[in-house]
Image (cartoon, rainbow, N blue to C red; front, side, top):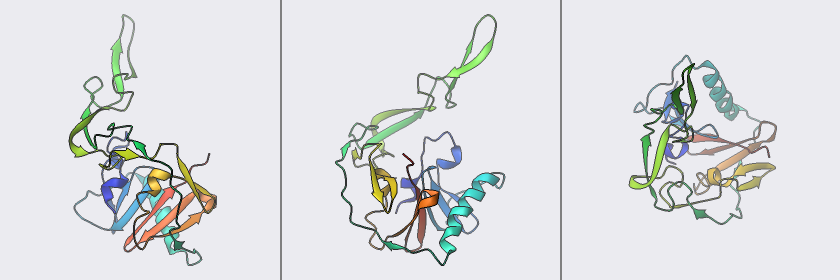
Length: 203
C-alpha cells in the first residue's frame, strides 16, 4: 500500500496533505481513511498542539490492541462499474496549482465603499487550488488509472456501508484482514506491518 494514496493533497486541513509521524508510527489520512505503518523519518512530526487530532488517531489505533476483536479475510465483492475519472477526465495525470484569486485560502478579498470582507472564492469553488487534466503527476483521485468508482457508490461489508473507492485501496493486498466496528461505523484492516481504518458511510 502506498502512503500517498491515503492522503488528500488538496485538503483545507493542511496536515492531511502529506503523511506525518506520530510517536513510533507514520500515518497517512484524508479524513475518511487512515493507513499506519512503522515510523519513517522521511515524514514530518505531527504538531503536539493538535491534541484532539492526536487523541482521535490514538483511539483508532488503540482498537487493534483489543484481544476480543475478530479479524476475517477480505471477502470477495461484487464491484460496481468504473467510470471515467471526474477529476482528470481520464487523462490519468493532473496538474494542481494554487488559486491565484484567493492565494490558496478558498476565500477572496472584496471591498465596497462601506466594508472590507472575504467571500467564498468562485474561481476555485473554495478549494484553494485549480486542477487541470494532464501534466506530469498521477491524478490523486484515480491514482493514475484514469477511471474511478462513482463518488457515491458504496459496498456493504458486515453491515457497514463503505466507499467503493476507499475499499479498492486495500482490496488487492494478498494478506489483508478486516474487522467491522459497527457502533463506530469503522472498518479496521491490517496487512503485514500496516494497519488502518475506513470510516463507514452513515447513509
